[in-house]
Length: 113
Length: 113
View 1 (cartoon, rainbow over the protein chains, first blue to last red):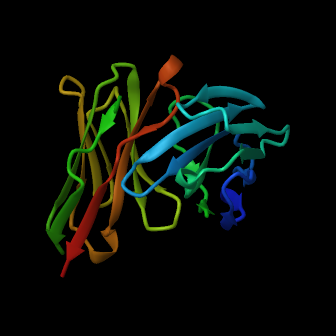
View 2 (cartoon, rainbow over the protein chains, first blue to last red):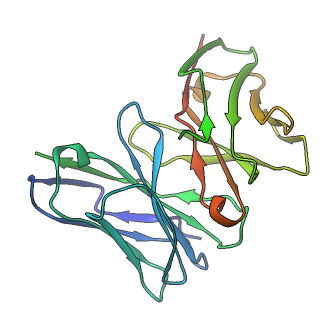
């Protein structure tokens, strides 16, 4: 069974640009969550999608948005990039039921210059 | 508002000894707890979980203990091995508004020879 796949693995963007990250969850999993990890910080929750609907949202500005498609694949978009957006962005897949473990992808390392 | 706290940023343990990583939480809605292990530039890997109806769960060298009255959980690794050197995150989830996985800031474990 394939794991969680995130593309691309690495990305360099310029301030002011926008970026789209992609995540393919484990087959059969309907929940996809996105997290941001910066040096010295834990995993900061961005949002969670379940069956194409946003189920939870973290405390990030509106420049951060996401969506989920009917095949459960998810994309995350960041507009008007700032230097502080440089981070490792992680996608996690869950079967969908409450109180189940989440499985993470390798992450996308975004550098904003 | 840090609902899941790991107060020790780092821990050093000799090979063969016990490693004890601690985690405290504040949200009474949490009823499912997990530990993840993370290497640099990779996604976290699920280790072990525990439901609030239990106070102990064991899987090989890893045991998680839950003290609900103290809102405290711990991960014991016995015996510790050099390959265990990584950052360990505890996470919690629950029902309703607490259904997303909330992570602590992590503890860096170094197992020395």
